[in-house]
Amino acid sequence: MMIIGLNTLLFIVSLLGSFGIVNGMEQSSEAMYGRFLRIYELTAFCEYILILLITPLFTASSISGERETGTLDLLMTTYLTPANIIIEKITAAFLSISAAVMSGLPALLIPLMFGGVSIAGVIGLLVSFLPGVFLVLAVSIFASTACRSVTKSIAVSYAALIMMTAGFLVLPVFTRIFSSPGENRFAYILALDPLLPAASMLFSQAGEARNIRLLFDFLKFDPDTAFLNHAALISIILQIAEGVGFAILAVLNITPSRSGSKRILF
Image (cartoon, rainbow, N blue to C red):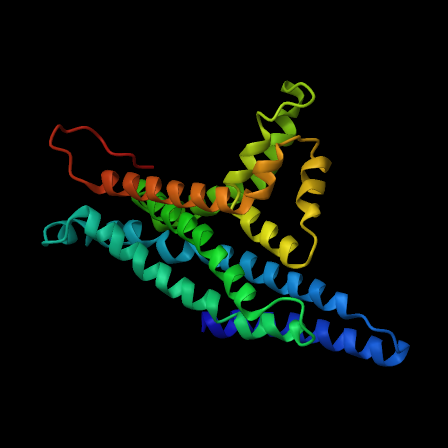
């Protein structure tokens, strides 16, 4: 049902946009092929945002739900270790979300009926969504281990999602006053934003790679050229590292402590 709903929305955006451009071309007798790339960008961005919005629901209740129903202690008495539990829950959720991500391929290909981006390029863009998905899943499962109820874990997961997307974009703006002109101290915080790889790849595919530079110029940052040229790769590596870190914290948070120290619980 999730895949059907997601693709229904994507096909609506893709088909309506493409038909609108074709209708405009018929009436004006002018070629508007460049506008198909705008529809492609819009459809891809919508897919990524929708994926990020539904991702926390897959792991935010995985541990807190077990705790609420009283089955977490029973689960811990099995042969499964805390690491097995966390890894298997993240893996199951990641495979489900990955299937949803890849199912959006047909909708993304509709605006490309006249070319512009290869199928391999579209698949590469979808693959670039997966590190962000992994990070959100890891943060959500850590929130699930840290919260006593499902409601709290879901709320914390979405608060973290807002911080990772909008927060990492806004925070450097507010901290800009502490930097002198030409400093790069806070510009690299954007590398932690899950939206950066998708935006960077979309701009590159549409021949608008300079828009990344325009974004940093708009924020009045001055990162070096090497960072801008490899922003997507740097951000993906950081997201994977962050995801692994939060997964490790989740494992530690459900590991019984022999010393009697308290785990993080809210």
